[in-house]
Length: 94
Image (cartoon, rainbow, N blue to C red; front, top):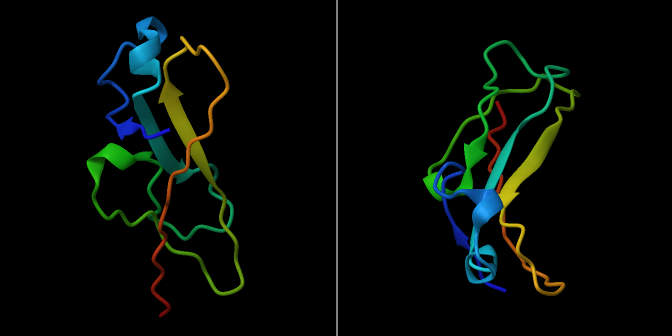
């Protein structure tokens, strides 16, 4: 299944038709809590539809940080489906 990524406020997700449910999705990723992140990290969810590089923050040496994927989607499914998305993380080591 091939979705079109849209902004989270682009659709009325609870009222999408079956055809639009199978066509549109809003995917985002963001930091879930402050543990491990250095001061200045961003709590804003970055949505795939923005198609822009975003710096979430920085981690100290030996630290870990938690991030989560979030999604908005229609509810009018007529069957079970599988979709694949690719997410790329780029890191700078300093």
